[in-house]
Length: 545
Image (tube, rainbow, N blue to C red; front, side):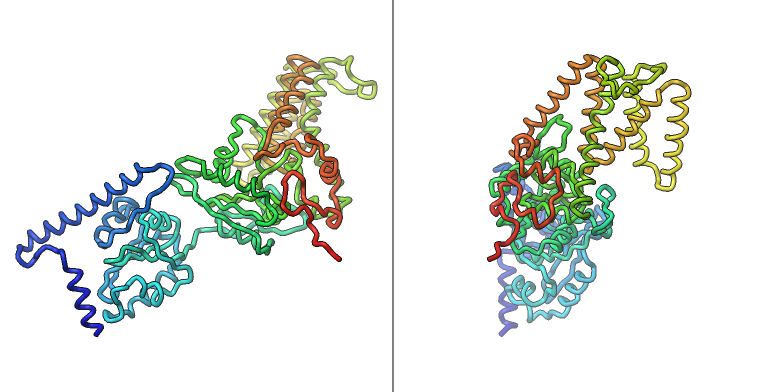
């Protein structure tokens, strides 16, 4: 019975084909080649027509049923036989030609080998006319296996690390998700180190990052929604949130802005996505918070924030954020409330000193009559060979150069570079009279305050603010300081992060939230989520009877 069905299927497959027996071998080859070329051109025209119909919505493109057409299209579209990492394994199982397509280095060889090994046991009578169903249900020993009938989606999944199994005569492909991205192990983040706490941090692999958060937040309401951004890179972007806590309007706003991004790609990952969604132009202040710690991201998700993971980036964006939120660090919550409060105050004082100490000192030096009696000791006995404002600007540029040099200097030479900078440059500059001692002292304090800022982006923005204040004081004295400070405050007050006030809880004023920022509350006393996030559930603690 099976043999008769097989013979009948063979005869049906030959229907409509040209009578090759009546032509010479050369004519048969030319006609087959012309037919194949015509199929390729028709498929290409169909693809161009589809892309021209709608730029916003991708039309479905069917998969060719002839394997030779598929192979030729793979050569044209993804570089098969040109790019060495495009692997196509052609084999025949049960008298059915197949081709497995994958990207070398992005798949697990052991799973691919096991799939092919199982398929070699097929005999012709075991492959019915429903070959795709048989392959999928019985003969492909992989966990994540689906079928796809859209050519463009299949190609995109292959470029993302999946494997596609094409079967001659079938208009669908079997997708085998056996990805194995190159990745490093989780390490402690260099920008968010803590004395006590976990030492694992995010890496460049999306699946690893979402797993690190899932390990800490085993909430069935935790959701991971994935989308692709970039016409060429098709970068995976994952939006994470707790479904019964997050504000739905905030979530919808973030999704809509990400979907509206129209770029060739995101090779620089989350930073480019931030600029494309927030659209903050030349504003130096960061409107999102970056974190490389899974515990910090999990804590923000429980507060009602939204986390955005971008593949190939070892940092995660949490939205929305505020200016005060960027000044907090995980170390404060790893210590007792008293010590955590003390550390927070020290950090706030350091940040304030990095902003205002240099401009105020320059103001008192230029106008000694403004100095209080208690600060009469301020001011250099000699101003040096260069004007003080020029000394400050040169010192600022010098600190930036040292910071950039330390990034590009090997670790073994970093100590030697620091000694050269501190002893040779600083000491000799003072002795030769180019700089005065107090300029070096206050610049060092300002630099320490900048490095103590938990957010690297906020530290750089504060440096720009300090430069603006120094120039304003040198140019316009007291009015310049007042006007510049007021303008910067107004800019912070008017700024918004995903329709949330950036300067909250100072403006708009929220006494309870401000007290929670000034004083690190004990865990059992912090029972409500911030008003800023408009969470569906305000209470953190379960109600006890």
